[in-house]
Amino acid sequence: MNEERKYEIIKRLVEEGGNKDRAALTLGITRRQVNRLIHKYQESGKQAFVHGNRGKKPATAIPEEKKELIIDLYKTKYSDCNFTHFTEILNRVEGIHVSESAVRSILEAAYILSPKVTKAKKKRIKKELEAKKQQAVDRKEIYALQKNLVEVENAHSRRSRCAYFGELEQMDATPYEWIPGEIWHLHLAVDDATGRITGAWFDTQETLDAYYHVFYQILNNYGIPFKFLTDNRTVFIYKKKGSPSLDEDTFTQFAYACKQLGVELETTSVPQTKGRVERLNQTLQSRLPVELRLADVKSREAANEFLNSYIKEFNDMFALPLHNIKSVFETQPSDEKINLTLAVLDERTIDCGHCISYRKAYYRLLDHNGRQVHYPKGTKVMVIQAFDGNLFCCVNDSMVFALEMIPERVDKSENFDADYVVPTPQKRYVPPMSHPWKRESFQRFSSKHSTASLHNASDPPYLA
Image (cartoon, rainbow, N blue to C red; front, side, top):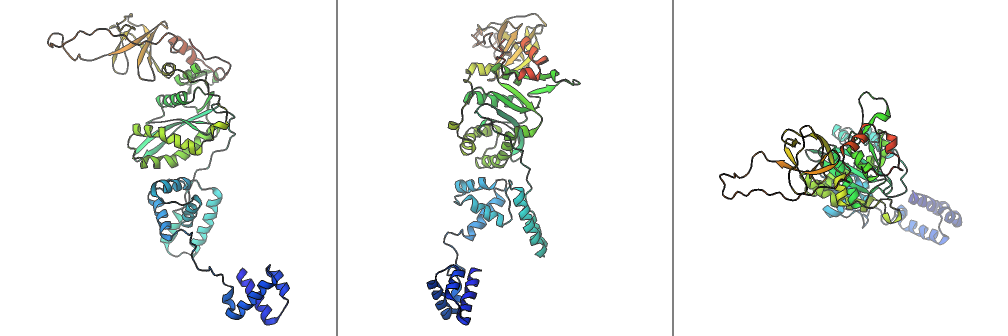
């Protein structure tokens, strides 16, 4: 349009005459430049006003072959990535070095929208597609345009960040097909103040064991947080059947472990309340399956190993720097305390053979010298499976013993094997009575423990 305007003004100035100063003022140029334009018009006519770069391709332009390759890679290999993540993979894996804005322009020109597209952009693209549809005749062309519109989930509502690192840890688990044909639950903990992933663990279901692994990572890497915010899963809390009162809520072993360490536990049924971990679930569902595929992860064990390195890279890219935010994590507990606190508790009864049955096997009680102890039939005991898998037994809230599994059949015979050696008792590790798992104290806690008492920050950690 500027070229056409210059041409009309200069043409009128030459053919009809006029004031050169007024023409220069209209065009925003000097009188000397007006004389140059008049001279060009007299020599070349209208062609003199066409810019010299018209029709020439910029030296920095991305070749069409590379654009087609980017589109093909996204459609065939990385269609589940958002555009930012796709750009990173192009630079790191495919060796194609382009900017994120260039990738976005290339893909949107082909009507390929990001899984995280905004409503405004989707609305604008839809209008363009409708205009294309009215002009298109071929049904295949209409279908090709329409199938590239990606429907996305609405974002969760925003909430203010906490002031300090460790003040609030949001926890949740999300089921997803993380590798082809395998649906696992990714258990996550994210710090509300920094957006840092503080713990992550894959399991086949949403389980207490997986949340214990997340809790262990937090305790081992950072220390004791101030509060957890979770949903109302029975892993954390369940309501007694037919009880309308909140005072009848029964808290679980995870809640009791929190009580031992002085961690507040808050639950909610509103996903938007813990919006940061909900949004993190969406982000990882977009990015993590691609990274698992590139790392050739085939099993859940390998996926949990991969999380150790991936979380560090993820936090370096997306979490807020820690040096600007004060930490309120308490001192890291000892390994022994963590091991005994993150335990699974079951009640059993001693049988007539002075043993207990636990998970389809029989166990006998051993003291710290490795000798079996005997209690009358019907004695109630508390079986403690520590976080490292070792089994212990608490009897009458006064004594703790190690458990040894009784094999169904001995390996060698005393009567027929010459190399038979009479087994001798070996010293066993037995935790002290200061450990938190005692039958009566846990039953008192779990029977009628109201939400208000659990949320009271002034209560010291309960150690029976």
